[in-house]
Image 1 (tube, rainbow, N blue to C red):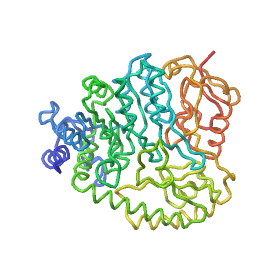
Image 2: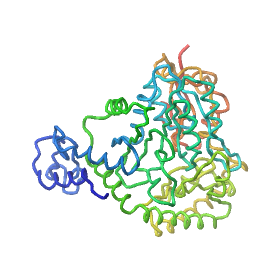
Image 3: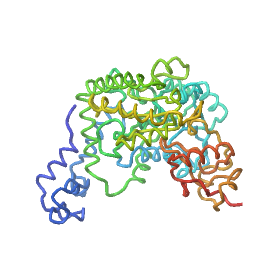
Image 4: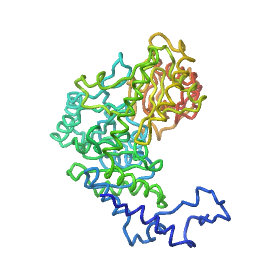
Length: 478
């Protein structure tokens, strides 16, 4: 199906309603905003793509088409990234004080959802390879052991695939969850392209998940931050409640343009996904071949991870470059790339992740390779002999309070030296990948704190900490 009811409604509105007496306040008036303004394409959902009363139900039509495309019974469009559906799922599938099984490597948005819901996380960690420097999959046996130890768990929230593109054995994990009446929820943010071609894995719903959040803006062609909430009617999640929690977090003034591009992205992938993704997979191979001609660099591909028993599949577009053989610090290489006009998606002290999608082409990849070579050569020797595994993958803090208890507790700011041993009242999130190294309610361990402060000093972005240098930190008072 290639119809795009929401996008078509926007085009009709722009053509037929030159003088709206509704929001937005700028009225797309060139005399006010200028002839080249981005605002000339600004259209609201209500009073724009549809009437204020939603008489034409164009969003509902587009969401039904997307549900069918991804194999769901329910679909909702979001313009707040996967953050919005992740938080709606936390609110719908958990209760205050109730235990919920959660990947410790989950995105910050899931932690925020746990704070909103008041549920108690039971942390689950994936396997991590010291040799590769990345997280692998989560063994199904570890999930079973966690569920059996906490029989009151009714939901499991996993990040699948991980930020480095590794997918756990979801069919086995789903079977373990479902045998115990547990809903399996996946933050599927990086996998909107899964299932649209034979060269990529099936999506998490097809592999057994009950509900997923995914970001159409990360790997497809919607405006930032377009995303989807998708769920199956399995009885393990109340879809009516899920719709209500989604609406609770939704603005009453959504952007039609973001919704319209989600609609178009879905149609394009249904019509041409096999070709587009196949071409992108070929670009990955082209990029990998070029990267591995640079002394000391290797790409962590299928051959490195697929033999591990915890791993089901790997995203064939995820270009994960290990810099350790060149002894080049990834944060320093990232700075050198930016100085040359190149932005990559991810970097830590050991890794670099240039993001390849259906939007790339051979010219772009070929232009990147000599710039990468120059940046690496400039930074050779900037890293220690054995660069550390990324902090986000190796964090196992002691949990003293639930995230909600700590978020609402009385707090105080202390010096960096005084923070060790105290209970965190705020986040410290290396970005990328957006995985909290410290979250509210966790005890600040000396080794972790030293690593975070060292990374901040080297220029890593430590997000959501009120003092991003980590010269001070907010802790629970007392």
